[in-house]
Length: 256
Image 1 (cartoon, rainbow, N blue to C red):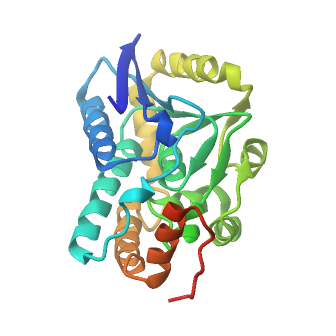
Image 2 (cartoon, rainbow, N blue to C red; image 1 turned 90 degrees about the vertical axis):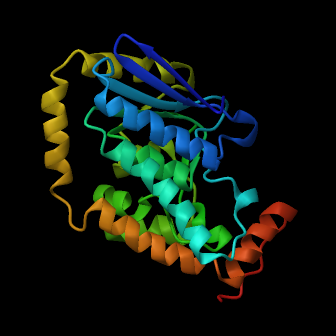
């Protein structure tokens, strides 16, 4: 299975398990994550969730090898599949902890930020890598980044696509904790255990209060993102970015 799931002491542990591809997300994985997080909403046995990964990277984003697509309707449908996953994570009325290591990039970065808390290995590195394949940030990235950082720093990450080391990400306020790599799972589990034994209904209400603070809503931002990404996927730059990735060469962008 490309998504593993187990339940231990009221803690659901969801693991991306495609390590040979750095856990790059496929449509199958998006759908399975949406299914699981939707089920967690009504499963009283689940009180806290850990989202983590197998291998040396949390998530390298969407699988670029499937990206070239000039059909506007098909592209919009695929974006809605991704947005369903992000919404299922962000709107789950239970605490969700991301435990990440290695590359946390593209929509993998978005997915981590959709969680309530992020615990990172000291080897984790974060990037809004979208411009390198001629796309706009997706998965609610701009929404989540502006919440955490404000517009100026959010723009810096999007416009430069630079890798942000874990400790710097903690200093900026993107993530909550940085721990030695060998201790990542134990730290995330200890935090999940503390939450699972607490008043999780009250935490669910607090989560709703946090969400009510922001305008526009995540749903409005995702719809805007859908429209912009659909346009971006029709550009020469996107086709060149994906082609260059597959051919393992530097892309030559022309701004159109």
